[in-house]
Length: 398
Image 1 (cartoon, one colour):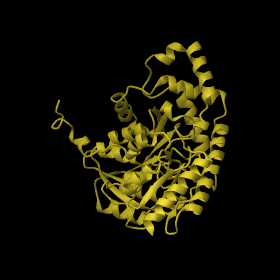
Image 2 (cartoon, rainbow, N blue to C red):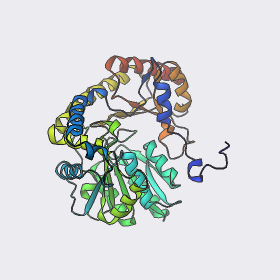
Image 3 (cartoon, rainbow, N blue to C red):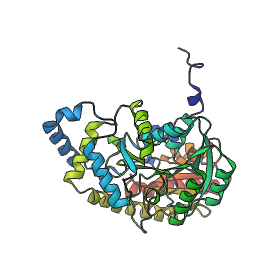
Image 4 (spheres, one colour):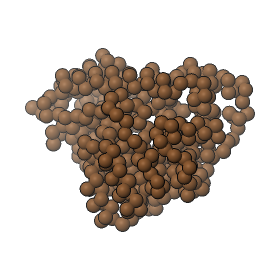
């Protein structure tokens, strides 16, 4: 069948995630991959999840295998509200929470509820490819705002908001940003919230890495400072528990609860209830904070090791970020080196990364940056891969 004239307009301009496409190559035998955004397999509580599954299927099989409510498993929602209040100072009196099928769905539901075709969404430049594609599928107009060492450039943000009257949303990953690893300062967070209130736009605060800090001081979430309902917050179990369970949560002003829930019902009815019950069981019977602390220690070691290898093997003229947490480092080469074109040569040498163009609002923009992930490879593979990549970069810079 010829689908040429049948594909919807909203999907015509959307390209497959570069990260997912690189996965296909990176999964080949012998490839050292720094391309993924995956947590370390060692961090998965497999035995505890097995115990939870057995207990649930023994004692609550019908609840685990039947349809459930769209808002989420009641016990899990209660636990999450308590955790958000205690750990992130996010008050729930004027907010509501639903459980979603991964943070990607949280972004999709927020966009579905608020953004019309042609409306503007401001994004950090660079930003997370998954959400950029979400905004593109709703035919939003993307406005990239450059990232500084302390977060999104506030002067450029205000100029963008002032000159474009149809902007509905500001998308930000303020803590250990994907892909840069940068953490937005408290001053920038406060200013962003002030601008959102001034120009009547929503901030979509995506926080999948916030609990993975291994150095420096915690910075309050933007949502914890929100008294006007301008912030929609996404939290996730993927990086601290298990990405395969596809569990995340969306926190937002009670005024849009109905539209968010209807939007979810139109997508998948409800999030996997068995997975929700497993997460709830874990929170009731095990120490989630201790589990996260073990991940922090592992990522601290691997981040510091990768940074030391980059210092040793990367040629002069390459710069990179020094994250205080999360799972990514952003490296920048001299202008004129296209990391998209360079990727093919790197893969031939059995090393994979994600080229910077994947994270830009303009997918045709030539970039000299790349994203490196340090969470999944052991020390010997990190050193081997960085050494190979460093030699390749040096050959292009001579």
